[in-house]
Structures are given as structure tokens and as C-alpha cells.
Length: 99
Image (cartoon, rainbow, N blue to C red; front, top):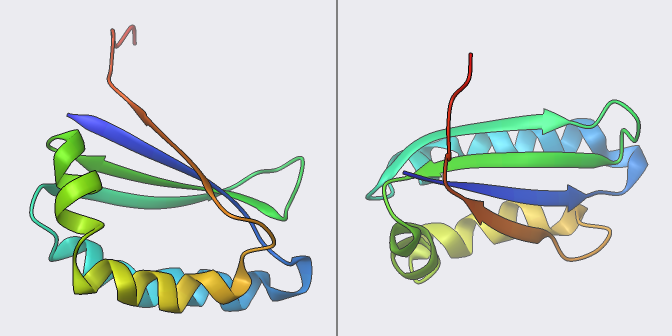
């Protein structure tokens, strides 16, 4: 399992519109092979910053499968108008679950 963390900074005045766009994109991720979950988190200290957290079976399910799909193009069409700067994406694997 690989977890994608997309650090997204948006225009402050458009938070509700951005959140609605992400909600509209849920079916795009749900339909993606290898996608196991999606959540959106807002940074408390900076409400212009969000974390989009996506769980994938493998890195390639995200970087090859999803990114080369029409669903990815639609995701970017929905979300990118709100980006204040390009998202920063990292992929992580769980080392240990302590509690």
C-alpha cells in the first residue's frame, strides 16, 4: 500500500468552491484501479493549505494508471482553477503502526 500526500495551496477566498470540486471528483478516484481511499484535510494553522490523501495499491496505480487516464484530466480540470501554486506530491509507505 502506498499513500499519496498532495500538499495543495488554494486561493483563500475559494475554499468552499475547492472543497466542492474535490467532492465532485470522488467518483473519478473511486473508479481508478488500485485506489483504496481518498480524504481531504485542511491545515488548521493555514486554512489556505490542504492535504489530499489517497491510498493506492502500488505507486504505479497512481503515477502510471491514474495520471495517464481521462479521470486524471477531469480531476485537474475540476481542481486546478483553485490552486495558488502547483501541488507538491509525496508518496509514502507505512513503516509501522504503533497504536
